[in-house]
Length: 114
Image: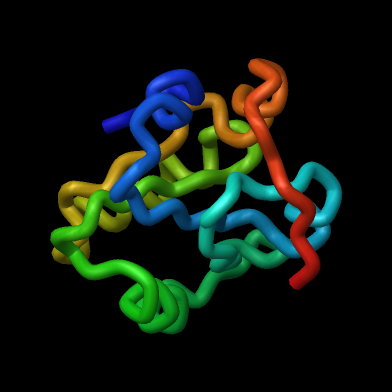
């Protein structure tokens, strides 16, 4: 369940975008307008899935059109598999190629100051 950068740019209305990267990554590249920044893995690769799900519930419900974003699509793919297997967020998708592909296609990013 992937979306390409081109598909997401053309069909972003109504989607809940959740950028799971870390703050340094957001500041380095910027973020997609309207995205929610909810770090999943810390710099050491550790995660608190229960805590992250609590934060996610504040921005998206299981029936929302949720799209996860990371740097390359790897981390968001891992989280997508977790969501589909162990949570009610079974309709979630992720950005194939991540923010890297978005940037390489020249799509707009805005500064992030978390």
